[in-house]
Image (cartoon, rainbow, N blue to C red):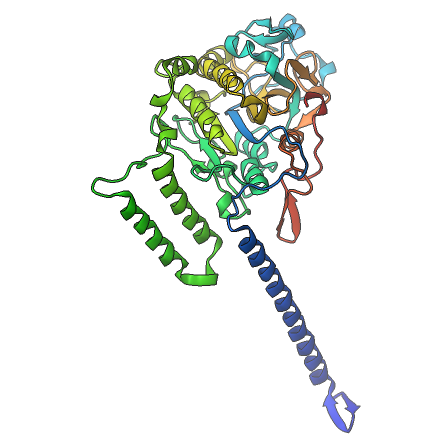
Length: 483
């Protein structure tokens, strides 16, 4: 056996090496424990100093024009060619094969021998800016001087779920925080009696990416969205039960809080978030039930939004609710148009005329009312309104009169919150195939939203699995022209 002499002792070499390994291993674990203890101490100190993780936080730079965001999410993919990006050459080439000079595109369902399909709608110049808007949006067109259309958006995926994840979280897979969660993480909430982040889904059902696209991912659970229920009663049980007074309800909440906190310092993230949800529910029940009662709005306001008549009643109610939530300090609100699958969304595979006419009829009046109402109340300057879907539609026809998913070039728009309206930035080519002038990825849209809120894309980060993650993944560009 190999041995080594050391101060009068003969140690087997294998035993000596084993003792050294044990020493190093134990020392390393000790250092790791010290580091972990230090990190936990810092985390507790930070939490203790702030008290409430949803308390308002200063922006990274000021002045920041926007304080809140309303995202009008047109799920399924509205066609840029039928909405905000007219293509005269495409109309001329209707029924012909795509010229080879425009390059190739990958689709899910469009066949190689498919023919180009000219726009099925007409455009007219709107507002003092004279920006062309499709006749699908006659009322929204009246607000075009407050709107900046981004005609050169693009993303990485051409399937609904992956594109929806990328639109909301900057990644093409679930498990990452949505932009709503990131923004609340960065700025907190200005309202203590309402949620900080609200999603109002379409009553026709869930979307392909499901609830994870709105979720907080690896951010603490306190930054998750509050999902409202479809229909005229978005939050149930706001009134006190029969025979229960306010003092009794307060005692119930306090008892639940004491029981939850009995674990002391071992409270985990989910339990802490649940405690806060009980506290928020109590405040909503006692301080803010009238926020959800639209009967307090004037008849003129409800008519402006299309409340009480079809086909605008549902989306009108939700847009009106979005305005009321902004007034109460909600930071990020998503109002979804389209639910379920296929033709119930802006997913015009079979007949783009039928699909888009029906979908636009539901949202045009409510969207125009929202912009008008915010402006009249002095809220548009501090509220950023974002409109768009997870991609656009193909210049080629599918099934004769439909359009396939299209991620190479499409339109979104922004209004309010520091945005210079009455303009279109970027461009797709002459048939709307791909973004060719100032192309902007979803990460650039995210970066611009953060910029308008006073948040720096690099500073807004969170440590996860050994790296500082952020919404934009890599460095995004601010769309300076619309600021």
